[in-house]
Image (cartoon, rainbow, N blue to C red; front, side, top):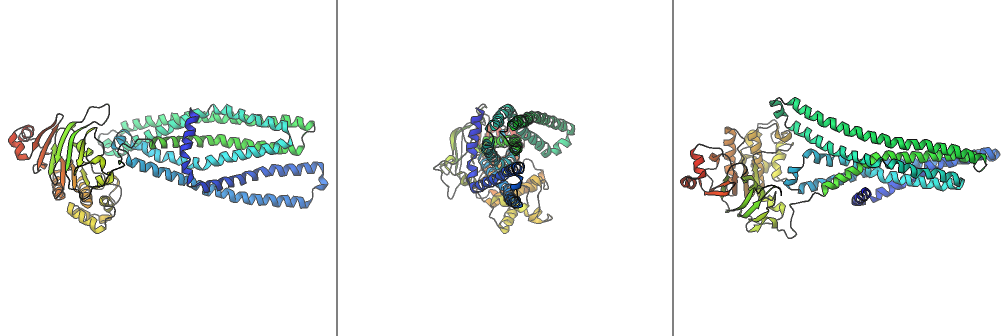
Amino acid sequence: MRNNKTFNLFKRYLPYFKKYKGILLFDLFCATLTTINQMVLPVILRYLTNMGINDIDSLSMKIIVQISVLYLTLKIIDVIANYYMANIGHVMGAYIETDMRHDAFSHLQKLSDSFYNKTKVGEIMSRITTDLFDVTEFSHHCPEEYWIAFVKILVSFLILIRINIPLTLIIFSLIPIMLIASSKYNHKVKKTFRMQRNHIGHLNSNIEDSLLGVKVVKSFAAEDYEFEKFNSENQEFLDIKKHTYRNLALFHTVTRSFDGIMYVAVIFFGGIFMLKGSIMPGDLIAYVMFVTTLLTTVRRIVEFTETFHRGMTGIDRFFELMDTDIEIFDNDDAIELKDVKGDIDIKNVSFKYDTEEDFVLKNISLKVRPGENIAIVGPSGSGKTTITNLIPRFYDVDYGSITIDGVNVKDIKLKNLRSNIGIVQQDVYLFSGTVFENIALGDPDATIEEVMHAAKLSGADEFIEKLPEGYETYVGERGLRLSGGQKQRISIARVFLKNPPILILDEATSALDNKSEKLVQQSLVELAKGRTVITIAHRLSTIIGADRIIVLTDEGIEESGNHKELMEKNGIYANLYNQGFTDF
């Protein structure tokens, strides 16, 4: 079963070699040259020793020079071939690693939000960095080491079988026994390597959580708690590594024991055959050297087992990631919308985040006319944000449909759908680049003039011009060098630059202080002009001017109308407003 899995992994992995088969074949050719070079020396010493013992007069200076020149030539070829293997061969592994990381990152971009809700970022990072580092070494050394071993064993056997058949069969019969004896630990080593990979991803994730939330940790004086949690994970990782090295030590002990057995066999049986005159002294020297070569080869293969298992674990985890289903994708007949008006129709939509959970939305219907500004209010957990996640297809509805300009969002190409929707969220994410780069996310091809115009429309130009390097100012990781209001205005500038016909404002001002909220609210008013706008808000004071206010509860849409109409209706909305609740 394990062999089948390894074979299937190899089968899936081999196409990555296809682009570089020329490099691989020449690398194996160079490996053959270096291997043959190593096999020539015992043959030369056997020839010289036997000649010196049996017919010393026939050994001339000319023969010594010829043999020396031949070996020197082979050694020069060996050095050049080894350089290629060490340089270009390793680069091939780096190329394959790069291609795999490219495919992994591309696949990650296509996965739905539900995947990221269940998977820690640290674990994902481990799969596309640490795991693939091991794959680099595996990609180069795996074909090379096994090919070298095959050539050495084959050539050694062909040479030695012509010298003495019984001794050769005795020596080579020990090799499979050695491999079978050591294979007992192969599975244990592989298992512990996978445990290492899984745990390092978990450890990375916990470290990331702790470091990103370092201010919260300090504010609660929870350093000791975080350290104890880290120390527990770190100690568990140490225990796994200790278990791994114990299995590796047993693995190497078995192979090293067989080293001694094979040398004893050569000395004992070789001595007997020499006494009987069926083997020459020079032949015995050749046997010792070939056995040394064989043992070195087997030992390298054994030692490569660690690299092999690391590589196979990395490949396994890579394909495990690649096999994660892409839940949100373009249909074969998906189209691109042109001149989007922003007519949104939500029909009988039901949705739940997990098959085992209850429905967040049940049979919800809502129509938004082109250019209309609607606000959705309601208690936490009523599904306000869920609605705005379904429109750009961050998730797909379970039942019902959502259409834009009469076309089901599932029938619109994802890139086209999302390019027509601008989203401003409460939690603004800025990348660790410059102000310009963060605004240009709205249109990567935008000029500096267009970026500056977008910043002016969002009101961000006022503080940007006061920054040390203006638009080239580095904002820090996640925009830590900027205030909440500044980050929010940069996110609004992004949407201005994108210029979408549909705008979603998801509690865009709820985390800001009063002064920042006022500035951002002014920017949002400008941004909303001429667009279809859906606003999710907790503060009732921010959505009084909406064309229509939707009151969403666990029971569904309970009320709908503008502020005046809802106040006159004297229902849920009016009751909260009259009681002075500005936050809902």
